[in-house]
Length: 434
Ligand code: AMP
Ligand code: GLY
Image (cartoon, helix red, strand yellow):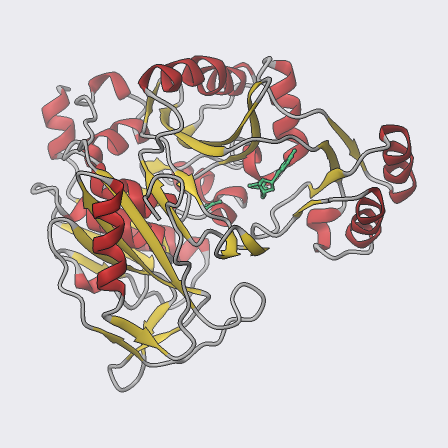
């Protein structure tokens, strides 16, 4: 089968997820002329804004119903956005049903779903990461701390919606965090705990699209995890991002690919895991070299929203080729050489207890260099768009420079309003003149 025939077979896609990430993937894929229909399950209030995109409505939200609906609709490619369904094995069940899926199985998703597992994989494959200890008991954790005698980073082993990490400033705070985590703060995610040495340096994220054996690397991005300006306040899923991150140049990215991404994929292969999907490596560039602080088994949110407008038209074919295990048949993935800026607008109370049900007014004219991606939005019984989650929108803009891209994004953000809306004013401070 030739490469072109393969690409042409891709007519119907299902994207699983409801966030800004899935909304931006749907938008990017909708630009591909040969794709006829993109379903998003469950999608959000902005899914149907893009040509060919609709929310998939199901009678029940269980795996069986999703799979039988994929069969009935003759879906050619399923893309699974969030980590939870990946860690629960949705991709495995779909592949058993002979669907073509972009997203790792339960085994590969452990890269994100178990920090202990990911750490062991890094050690086995000489991938640089912070020193760590893994434990299942509070007493042992306190003993490790006593011996280490420095403030540490305390991490729940399992998925904790981005909240399972505490970077402690003092030994006393480390003790408190250990006690807290073993008292069940993160439920079963905290049954196992990782204690890590604290490392320092700027953070950058790198991404590979994998077909099980080979990979293609995307431009690096930088996220802004803290809620408030100046990197203050609690950790969130991410309040903004930009790409490409200028902290690393083309040669650095090549070196990091050889140092981190290739050995990770090879390490997975050694475990007989055919990893199809995104390997996302969150790095810290320390004075003793780059080190991995986390892996994710999916696109980042909101990094994905910043990246999607940079993707060349081949993006759909490349995802499809990965899912079919034949990246060598895919066209070369190209990237627009622009600066892309993404700002997240969040609800009052995010991340702890976001307000919902607030009416949204949107007066933004999208263009080839400006996109509005919905996240926590829904359409109520009166056809109003209302808030339904913590992160409500991402506004994304591109320009020749980051100053131009951020100016365009921030000036258009004024066109969106809802009660309690807040956003960071300093996203991209690393690359802007502010
Ligand atoms: P994670 O949820 O694993 O992304 O961690 C959240 C944040 O904690 C990261 O973005 C880092 O800023 C910080 N962090 C994680 N591990 C370490 C470490 N070993 N040393 C210092 N900071 C860390
Ligand atoms: N923005 C970070 C993440 O998606 O985990």
